[in-house]
Length: 110
Image (cartoon, rainbow, N blue to C red):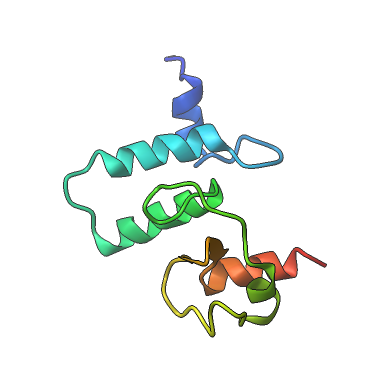
């Protein structure tokens, strides 16, 4: 019987070996795999954006600035009336998440 490395085991279970918190080592490996491809499909781009979001990065892989919590709570703020894009945007040096991330943050504030 062949022994598996931790990375292989983690890939087999899609990063679900960690009991709590974000499994950044698995996510970073997945990001590296996607970034090493020459051409990404739309689904792969969406997956890459989701991985970036999980480790607090923008769709371009940059560190996110502080979140605009008024936008998270109400869907509107002085910087932004709505964000219907598939990714968050930076306005006035504040992070305005896309709908899925905004709803996740809003539901976990309670």
